[in-house]
Length: 252
Ligand code: DHB
Ligand code: FE
Image (cartoon, rainbow, N blue to C red):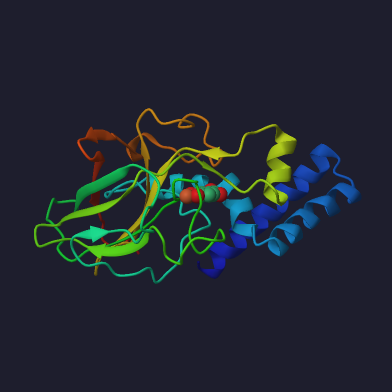
């Protein structure tokens, strides 16, 4: 961010919040409750959760407004760098009897002019059948259902995992208090998270939802968009889904 952009944006944020305080007659005690909420969320390790639930989808919509590649999606608070690099046939790391229906997820990675990208990296993470993320929630082996793999010579990929369930965000902390106060539920529709990267292209953060899934219309993070919903098709051994990613060159 350039310095002039910083000044423009931060001064407008300052004006907007001061107007807001006047408009609602926010008292000093209410102001303190708000700052304490932010401090509490940091103490609880929930600052990303709190902000992402309310605001992250707004920023991805801005990125998506002029896009030549696949639609971007919220990252959410649970991405971690350094997931295990998988060899073909790709299977996301899982426990011996990982709960959930088997899902084979396939697709391709291409450029906007339809050239296939071989050796593009997909970095995938998701909740387990109980709606919990490894390395975040306790009692799950590190890197469970997180992994990186690359596309083949023809730009295609295939990975085997489980169908994630709708996900209930942590409700015992400060974010939960706010959502409770608003009378909202805590669910996100079932989703797969992916980052897709290839040398010379913009990294894409995606998130895919399943058609006809619960909470598609009432995601607590308001992040579902038509272009991110895939069909979940029944097979003999479970389910399959597919999505073709398009990466675009760097913008600036
Ligand atoms: C949020 C997003 C997620 O993908 C998730 O699993 C949990 C929370 C969020 O936007 O806060
Ligand atoms: Fe998630």
